[in-house]
Length: 278
Length: 248
Image 1 (tube, each protein chain N blue to C red):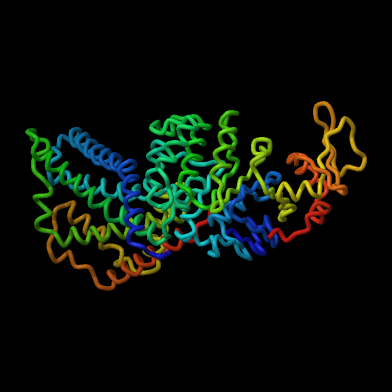
Image 2: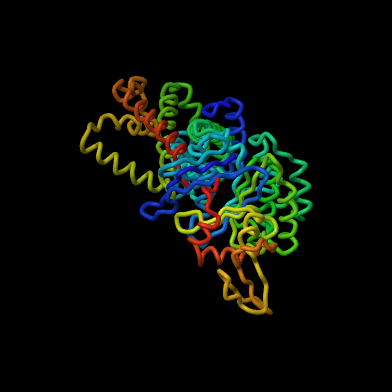
C-alpha cells in the first residue's frame, strides 16, 4: 500500500534519509522506533505528503504522496505529536471532516468517544491534553482511512486510556487498513506493534515481525549476564540477555532490549535481518 | 477521481470555510466597523463636528482597508504554519480548490459583507434621532457612482490577493511583512517605473473622501488596467503554487 523507494531526504544541509527503501502492507500495525532526530516524524510527514523526497519516491496506492492529491489525502490521516487543537467541540470537528472522508462513520466516532470517556460536546480548548488526544484519536479512527499515522499517540494518556487505545487500535486494524505508530514509549505499545521498524541516522536498521525477530534473536531473562549475549541490560532481579537464536528457542520479544541491541550492534542486526525491507 | 478541480469537493471546502468564517471573522468585522465609527465620533466630538453621512465615508474606507488587510491572516494565517497548517494541508481537497475558497472568502465575500455591514450601519446611524449622525453616505454617493464602486471593488480584490499571497509566503506576522514589502515595492516602482500607474486608486479615494467626484475621473487608463490584471493573475498563480508546494 505504501512504497518508499530509494528515498533521499534532507533538511537543508542535514541529511535525514539516504536512499532508503521500505514498504508497508495493510493489516499491520507498524511500530516506528528510533532515537531522537533520526527522522521518525519526517518519515510520517513524507508518507502523508507534508514533505517531498529530494530523490526517490514515496507512493500510497501507487500515487506519489507529494503533491498532496485529494485521492491520496482521503486515504490518510495523520496525528502529529504536537497537534494544534481544533476549534469547537470534538463532534463539531468530526462533522467538519466527515464530508471529505467517504468511509467516515459518525456513530463509530460517538461510540469511541464514549469508550474513551470524552465528552464530545465540550469545547476541545477546555479539555486536558490527554482528553484532547483521545478525541483526536477517536476522530482519526472513525474517519476510517486506510492509512493512519500516529506520532507518539500514547503521550499524555493515562494508564486505562493506554489500555483502551491498544484495544481500539488492534480491533480497528483490518485487511484494508494499516497503522504506523511512531513512539518512544515502547512499553505502551509492546503487544500492539508488529512489525517493528528501527531507524537510525539516515538508514533503516531493522524491519521485521515479532516472529522473524524471535526466530533470529533469543530474549533470555536470567539472574546473570550471559557472556555470549549480543546485548545485556539489567532489570530488577536479573538481566535481559539478547542472544543469537542458533537453537531455534522460543521467546517473547522485548522491544526495549531489541532496540538497544540494534543500536549497539547496527551492522550485526542489519546483516541478521538482511532484507531490502520489502 | 479528478484531483485538480471537482465541483462537489469545492463546495465542501467552501462550506467548511464558511463555518470558519462565521466563527473567526464575522464578529471581528462588525467590531472593527463599530470601533472605527466610534473613534470617528469621538474625534468629531472633540472637534465639535458631527459624524454626518458625508463625514462617515472616510471612516468606512478606513474600515475597508483594515478588513482587507486582516482578513487573510485571520482566516488563513495558520495555513502556512508548520504545526497548525497540517490540518489545512492534509484536508482531502486539491490545492486549486483550497485556493479558490481562500480567494473567494478574502477577496469577494469579505468586501461584500463589509460593504453590507457598512451600509446597514450607515442607514441605522442616519435614522437615529440625533443630529450628530444625520444623513447617509450611501444615498449621497452610491447611486451616482456605481462605476467607481465597481472599480474600487476590483481594486479590493487586487489588494486582497496581495495579502493572501503574503499569508502563503510568510509564516509569521504575515500582514505586517506584506505591508512592509508592499511599501518597499511601491517606493521602488515610484523611483524606477512610472508613478502614474499606481496613483489611480489613491486619487479616487481622495476624490470620494472629499466629495469632488466627477464622472470623467473614473476612467482608468488601459495600460494601468492591463498591468493590474497581469499582476492579479500572477498573484493568483503564486498563491496556488505556494498552497500546492508548501512543506510542513
